[in-house]
Image (cartoon, rainbow, N blue to C red; front, side, top):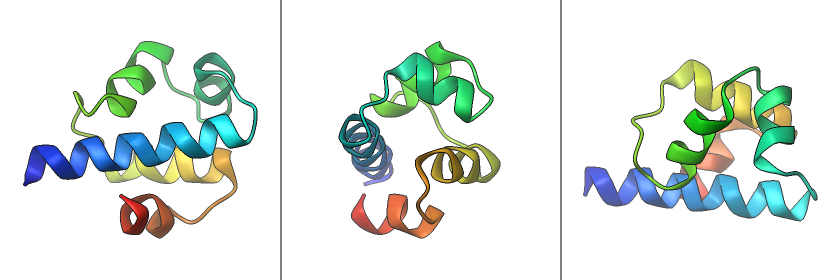
Length: 71
């Protein structure tokens, strides 16, 4: 269940990023994180911290809850 939640959150981030026309590099710059870290988050391979989740949400201009609820 835990792994499936990480994967669902990652998929939601990827979908929102693509809808905004952003590359992983663009979003990583906006969220002040490494692109490889973001890639691992999107692929459900990284246990994302709350602070990173909030930074990604802010960069996507959505609430952090959206990333979890949709996930």
